[in-house]
Length: 130
Image (cartoon, rainbow, N blue to C red; front, side, top):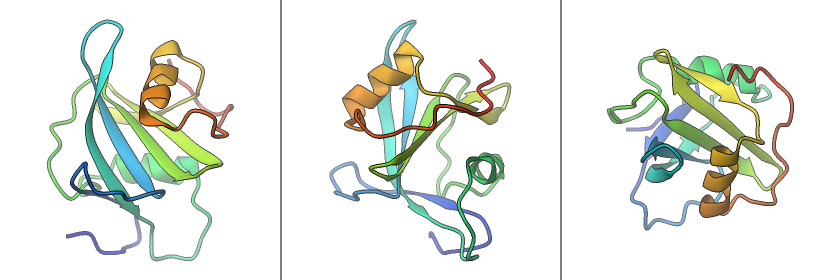
């Protein structure tokens, strides 16, 4: 069950549910150049009254109880966090942890196109470790 806590919680929900913003999407690698949408869920923000920062989300994502279900995350999976029409962030699972990705990579842009987040303002700077 997803309840507010000191960390963000990433909740699973049925794909047919229209959850709007404050959502996340898990994309699995389906080959050398394609990815498939595997899970969509809502984000329960931390109960603390503070600004949600990418660095904080990266820390929360790498905590053992971040998701409400075992998603069997694999190397190369991508996670897109959509907060509103102006804030969309991306992370990739590499070397056993989630790491921030900066928009611009062709595969990431293709996921955004298929997801419908194309046209939002995305974080263009950060710690992209590709």
